[in-house]
Length: 251
Image (cartoon, rainbow, N blue to C red; front, side, top):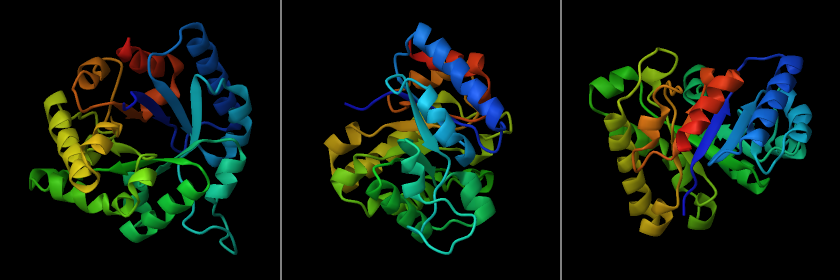
């Protein structure tokens, strides 16, 4: 049975001290009022080794926002999947729209990242989604299908460790939000693609998160849709009260 998940993507925000303070606050809030879903916080690399020891891992999982497509070597400034795992982190976001757009991450690059993450026992939160021009041209279905190639190269067993996150890129940081009906339509399509590749059972066990301007005010309506299994949260994950408000949508 698939899990309901609320994951926070801190992006390039919070210095180390601020990040530790936020992790402690979230840990206290969620320890006092246990969530009815899995909760993950994905932090900048510099936070990982400090944050993982201070959260209750039965309540909060910790992940990185990226990892390298190489195992090790002379790649100045890169952080390998093995390094991420050595901090105690359990997850890694891969294929985020910002990585695709600003750093030109291709299907081939992301395929290598996914394989390295899994080889180091990290669970990928794999992002897919279309930009505004593609949505307006009604190409969203073919866009997500092409992007899924990076994880559709996996065995069924390995694919079962992947969490998918659909991001309508046109709704990230813009204040726009896909309607619950739009979100459900594409989530159902993504699940149908998984079923066609791996079978219905694998598809039914795959968590697909919504990642576009999800807030406490709209989370409950979005998460009520049958194929929306939670959210990958950006800005609202940077404030404990807002993040908790989204988590509480599953109560």
